[in-house]
Length: 308
Image (cartoon, rainbow, N blue to C red):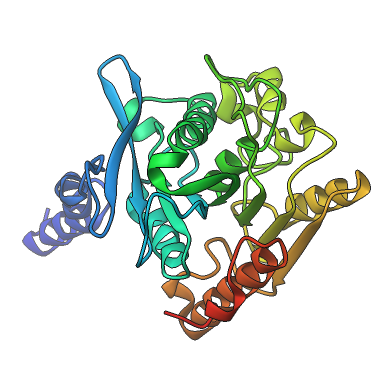
C-alpha cells in the first residue's frame, strides 16, 4: 500500500467515531460535574425536614425584610424540575427569593432524584408532600400562615407541587397528604399526566402502566382543588402543551378556578435565557401574571409586584 493511502486511512480513522473524537469523549464526560446536594444556599436558612436512612433532606427558607415570627405571612414553596432525574434547589431558590422580595416567606425544598439518590418518581412525590407537612408543623417558628401556603414548580417540580394539593394518599411509601392543602398552585410547564401520551409514560415507571396511572395528577386529584395558574409554551417538546390544556379543562369542568397562560412558539423552560429576549419577556410576564393571580386570592401584595 502506498504511503499516501496509509496516511489517508489513518486520518479517516482518527476523525471517525472510533478514532480521535471517540477517544476524547470519556475525557469530556469526566469534565461534566456531578450534581451535589446543597447543604445551604446563599441568602437562605437550611432546615432538615426529612430523614430516610442516612439521607437528610433539607429545605431552604428565604425570609423577607422585616420578618418576625408573629407575622403569619403567606408562603411560597418552590420545587425544582429535572424529570425526577436531576436538579437541585439551586434552581428553585430563585422563586423563593422572588417571593421573599414581595413580602412572602419563600422556601425551596430538596427531594430525592434518580441521579443523586437512585430515587423513583414516587419518592419525589412523597418528599414534596413531606416538605409541606413539615412547613405546616413549623409554621409558628417560620412566621407563616399554614392556610396561606402556595405550592409552585416547573416541569417535574410542577408535578411534585400539584401532588401536595391532592388529599388522597400518594403512590409512594409513607406518603400521607399535608394536613392543610395548599391555598394555590403556580405551575410552569408542569408534568401532570404521566400515563401514555403524557410525560414519561409507563416507561418511566418500570414499564408498569398501573404505576404511571397512580402518579398521574388528573387521574388522582379530588374534585375540589386549589385555585391554579398554569404557564406553558406551545412548542414544548418535553412536556406536551396539550396536557396542560386537558388539565385546565378538567379543573374547570369540576368547578375549580384554573388559568392557563400560553406562550406561543417557545419550548420547554420557556423563560430560560436560551430564548434570549423572548425568554426574558416570558419570565417578566410569568412573574406579573403570578403576582396578579395570587393577589386576587389575598396571597400577594399586588402593589409590590414591580419590585425587583
